[in-house]
Image 1 (cartoon, one colour):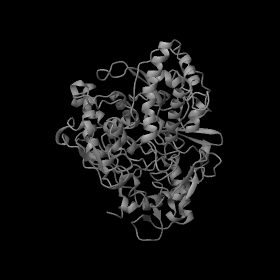
Image 2: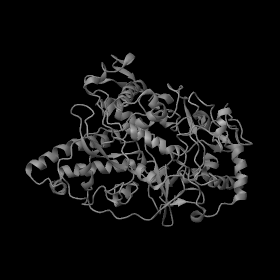
Image 3: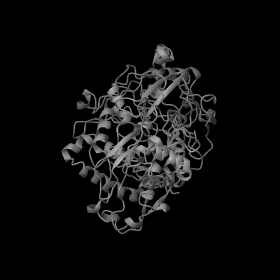
Image 4: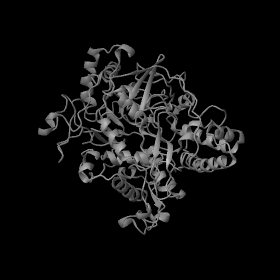
Length: 602
């Protein structure tokens, strides 16, 4: 495949969705057992904030809600949505509550579509996926569960979860006894009722089966903690929804979901620093989790480019993330911080790390025309940092436009072949514009929804990786963008000395700040020799800087001092980075921490 530019990685969408009205009053779903007691850290969110974030709808419609509640696993009568099955795949269970009356796991929500987005579009109640599934995590330590809001779910095996869903749906279609039990739970007892149920179930099962068997397979399993969201998004928008299978790319570049605190305040988001506009980011993510989109109507008047995007909810989640604090190390649970050692580590960080990883109180951009400043993030050339580059190579270079050839906007119309980047962009733009128009937003209302960003955005940096502030990073293993390094300690050693194969366990290692690699709490074996799994780069060794070397060889004492410092930030629990910049942003960017070096590649 041709190497793509960073701009070509911008997000757009993930598997074909089929909707249908819930036709029969279902029996109540079986009660879910309460999960183990959860410990919440001070991240400046209230319980109401958490309840909303865990359960809000983005407009995603994976399948009919009643079917999801009562679908059995492929090989047993256990419900797919059971806490036990969620746990198997790393989806975090939660108990029933007023905000979650059916006891759904975090990141699975009810989407209610009361008005069709176009003539003939599905209405009713659906189960949908939200950002909280991947961006909420738990650290497990000796029987305790420490919730990390906005973290990376390092237990989630999304690929296996969808494959299990497909297997469950296919087994129910093929096994008369399974289908009869589903029909009974939904009170579809007559022949006509069962026929109607089978018809809508077959349509929804076909979408998930196509996604699981044509779009999801990769050269090797992703395993927990990672997914190739950008390729899946690309596939859904340019292949699945328009039904052009030739455009499918193999998702061989899984990455860990980035943590969300400080993301809204940062100048760029995504690992490759490809987006600034939060609405474009959040709508693109929703396109990737079963947003129903019309790419088949003859014209916009007939519904072309319409969708079920929940723009106001996407705005609310962004505003709520403005006030999410990074998690502080809980000394009462994980042990005391050696403050003297952390002080030494802080000086080392300022010398060797802060030119890329901004330190509190951060360096900021100058205020823009809206008076807002943003936290500067390191934009490190991939050729310098030397980390795995599969993400920039996995999407096929060109795409067929198929039946959309004469429906595309502007200069793209009439062209049978476009670059994958241009084809996706030619679809994202009108979907985005239609969603804004359908939400009846004025240009004035769009300013805060666009995160007070100046539009159009500047050109995206090419072939870089974003280096964000490290506050709260202790809670986000494994490391590197592709999760190829099991703990923070190994991020500080020569790359050649890192573990080449390790188990991705669910227990947290509070010493090296990583995942348990023993195999006792997780049996997925991560092999860094496989495509997309390289743990090269970001190496501290005595060699010229560049080509993967970012700093000098550290002594073991220095490494442990840095570990202690990373445990200590943020230094104040519940400290929220002010959205739009600190007070001094009005007169210029905040000063760099004492001792911070200029990046060596500049």
